[in-house]
Length: 42
Image (cartoon, rainbow, N blue to C red):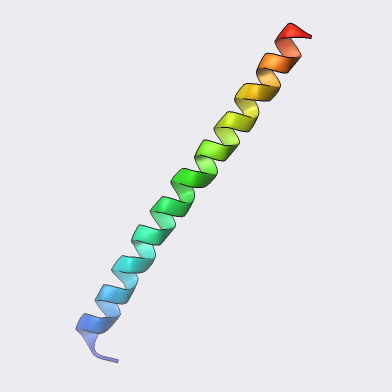
């Protein structure tokens, strides 16, 4: 594998990871938010 190819691959991996992380944080935040609302109003 060439070095440029490897860097490109790692950069793509970082982009995918940050996207995945933001999605996970969004899901987690929404879950906490909804459970907080149900705990407060029930």
